[in-house]
Amino acid sequence: MKDLSLHLMDIVQNSISAKADKVCVFLTADNEADLLTMIITDNGEGIEEHLLKDITSPFTTTRKTRKVGMGISLLMASSNMAGGDLKIYSKRFEGTTLEASFKISHIDRLPLGDIAETMVTLIMSSPDIEFELSVSNKKDCFKFTTMEVKEQLKEVPITQFEVLSWIRDYINSEIKIILGGVLNEILG
Amino acid sequence: MKIDQLADLIQAKILTDNKSLDNEISGAYICDLLSWVMSHANKGDVWITVHTHLNIVAVALLVEVACILVPEGIQVEEATIKKANEEGIAILSSNKTAYQIAVEISKFIPLVK
Image (cartoon, rainbow over all chains, first blue to last red; front, side, top):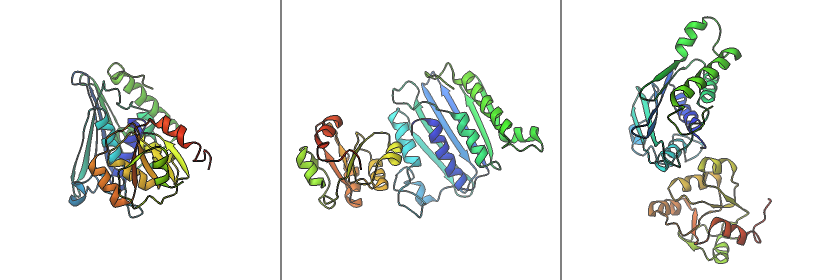
């Protein structure tokens, strides 16, 4: 994957397949520790124990149509390539948490990519799932939740064009504020 | 062109057992971004990559490439070779760069399919 937003999209699809109705994404950039962390946690049906121990292998999959599943293995490769690591915690019928880290300054660290577009695409395709996005640089943080937006919107659907445009702009500008000076890349 | 013919042509070493050397090579593809390879390489390609992780076997299987070719004499992990043998994917190793390999095989493998 060319950037983290594409990995995010891919991993959240796993949560959706696991019938989660709430998915939280945490992006934390810690300049002192030189570490960028992406945590995705859901309340889906969790991963069966026998699959969990080999979950980062590309030959572990629940697919019936083919014997390889690349999502987690590719993210693990991206993390390892940038001096980071990947961990997965899961409890059957409670949910799954995936934690991927990257050394911010590592030359092979993937750029952040268009996180706002990923969130908007996810909301658009699964409007009934509650999504949360928290972005932090250890000093400041910002949090976006679809639940709050829906409360404000009342009858207006969250998938309406103007709403999605607003969400995209809002997330973009907040990411710029929080991560702009922290990640050595041009954002948005 | 067959895999063993390719190996002879560029003096590459065949790291896997001899099961799938009969595969016909119909093209070549060079890329190290695995997700990109998954969506852009073609069935029957010889895939040249600097990656040696187990993931390359999974990608090769998915795309049905003819074989994997690791350039610049990069060491390939034993676990990767073992899995490739299980899945019938040939892995070749060459001391040449991807570019040198591409130039040499371009006379024998068609550019357009």
